[in-house]
Image (tube, rainbow, N blue to C red; front, top):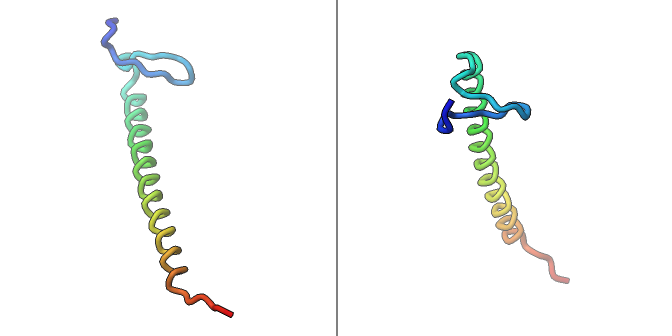
Length: 68
């Protein structure tokens, strides 16, 4: 083992990536993909939420206010 070998921590236990089975490595890849997808979707949600606020503000400005 060298210091440059990749390690991964799972449930508080550290493992050498090279010591894991192909199945475990595949699951790590799946988790990395899903985490990236979640981050992408969160970014899209932030954009949509910002647009919603802008549309709400525009709607308020488009509705005439009554003056008595």
